[in-house]
Length: 232
DNA sequence: GCGACAG
DNA sequence: ATCTTGTCGC
Image (cartoon, rainbow, N blue to C red; front, side):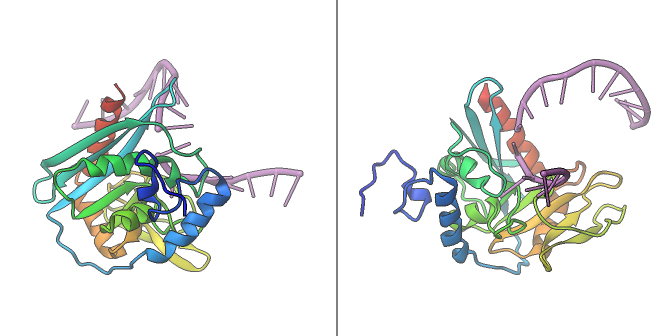
């Protein structure tokens, strides 16, 4: 077994393999980690929720990853963390997590408050191999995690009702992999999918609670602002 | 061959 | 992800 240095990303990859460098290696890692996903059913009453997001430089290949922890009760900020870095993998639909996970894990490591739930920018099980970013981060941190995406990766759905809170099952290959949820009346719905240790219903309820006024949950909005500033 | 394809 | 102009509405 090859000994790894403290500078690579071995801690994000079972502590054995180095970070994948090819599409084939990434697929193998997904295939391995996928089995560690734990399904949950909620209902949970998280005291804190974390939003994660990454912003990319226009001219550089630099990026900034941010995590913002909010107190669920009043949406006040409990903790934040921002780190700058480089994409760890090219962008390939279905392998998106390999691009941002290292930076996001770095940011999570710098938190003082351990969040009760992770809300990711992207999908959880609504993924070709049922292992999107939210599932990946959930497994690596073993924290409840789900994703709120702005556009679809996989699946089909029936038209979503107009009122806020209306939802439609996101179905792929005959199975429900998430929900298309209307967080604001008259606004395009978002894609909610479970990642790890949480149920779809609790995830949708939480998303609605966190999006009292805008399309995206406040966790995502706060993290988005933070990483954009972090890009400087 | 053609279209789809998280961020 | 990021660029990109005006426009409608509170």
